[in-house]
Length: 167
Image (tube, rainbow, N blue to C red; front, top):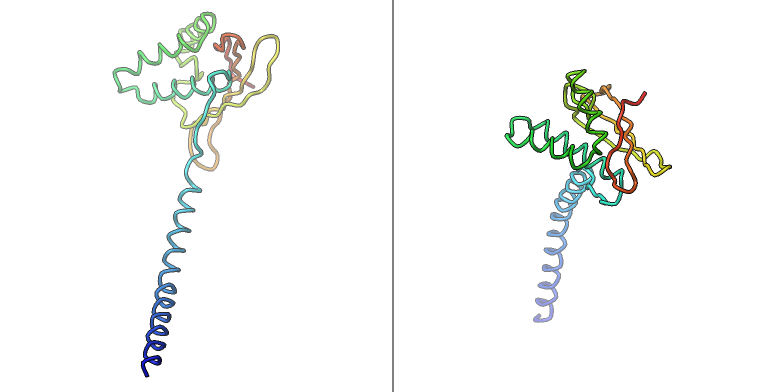
């Protein structure tokens, strides 16, 4: 009888463990699936390389857009000016200033408002320069307004030497 009691006790424990796992497994599966879905919808991580002219163009446009987006911050104006000085050649700075004087619009974005998204793609290089295409998205939704800017950078200094609206 003593062996029967021990066998019954082990059997009861095994049944209890199985029932517990059966109850917990769907809950764990639901949590895991929910976590995976949340991670899958998160933005991709950003990365860069200071040697890349394309990365530098992306860094410049991102920082410039951040500065004008946060125009209520007292440091925004000074930051935008410092960014231009750091990322643009002297000739490009003059070209931007001339555009702004004539058009009363931002000479980096070629617009009076601020985009909600931007993307920079490498388009080629030659004769000591690299070119990139900056795509600015101005709204959200099914049919957002998009404009493009062709940006040229010097491969040696990595400074932006020219920028113009792309057709």
